[in-house]
Amino acid sequence: MASSSSDEDVYFSTNPPPRSLDEHVNLASSFINTHALANRRVVLVTSGGTTVPLEKQTVRFIDNFSAGTRGATSAEYFLEAGYAVVFLHRQFSLLPYSRHFSHSKDCFLDFLSEAPTGQVEWRAGHDAAKVRDVLARYRRAKDANMLLMIPFVTIGDYLHELRAVSRLMRPLGARGLLYLAAAVSDFFVPPDRMAEHKIQSTDAVPDRGSDDPPPPPPPAGEEDEEFDNFDASPRVPRSKRLVIDLDPVPKFLKNLVDGWAPEGMIVSYKLETDPAILVRKARCSLVRYQHHLVIGNLLSTRKWEVVFVSPGRDDAWLRVPPPSSSSGGGGGWGDAEGRPLRADELPRDDPDTEIEKLIIPAVAKLHDAHIGNKQFVALPA
Ligand code: PAZ
Image (cartoon, rainbow, N blue to C red; front, side, top):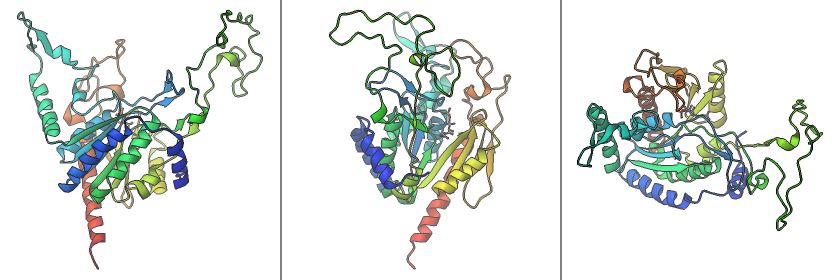
């Protein structure tokens, strides 16, 4: 269900904004207004996963798989296409340009060595051309003030930032583009049910002010006779479990379409794992939220195929060749423990195999049409 404006008021008044919201709004406002005055297109790219804190003083949280590859790669291609980019991303996820030198591949330290003089210098044999190319593109974007990076961490931060930044995009009219690639949690713990302190795994905490030692644990097998009715296992007593009860995150896409950024073009992603339901779910999302484009992708193939689902058009698949262990897809890559990566985890740093190279021009073309339609509607009779 889409959320009514009163659901919106309730959510945003009961879930605290991130500390840096005002600072981010000031930065985004000046960035967007500058580009609006220059008649430039501006895209808001959302990227990476949102966390779901379990405690107010957060020790533990629920997270998801997203590394921010889609968002960071897309941002680069939008910059190449002339867009100014607000990059709303999960803190410490991949960033445009620096993603080419991440901790798992091409660590920047591998490019450097120390000369006998003590000076740090370029290490012979390393791919200077790649560094020069990425650096030149990064500098072009930064020097022309075309890239603004705004971080978030939690689902609450994300929603506050998304609402604030998309509202700032109104002066852009149809030239604003919202490209929502972040992997946003569907469930959360509302503040009134969230523990203040670290959730304890045992209740053996002495009373405040008491020096008495904690009571001894009950004998094995007598800890607690109660069990959850959805789990018949008699081996794990309730007192040792953490049962997490999550509320659904309100769906704000309709609020975004109708109220926050009504003139802009809105593109959302839909992620599934079951190929049998992907296109149907993407179309449902389009019908429900009445926006302009849903890009469907499957977890296991998202780096080499996506489907565009949009109103009045046939579904269109975009594909690049999938990686193979012998191709440039990255044979020999492993995770931090040296286990080989699955195909969908392989870094794809060859522009010819990055699917975003196809996605962004296709989105930009639909954006041309969106701008054209709005101009047509705006003409006096
Ligand atoms: O960050 P990443 O490149 O590993 O993954 C990208 C993605 C799958 C999160 C993105 O393409 C996507 O589908 N985002 C929307 C997820 C959703 O349905 O909420």
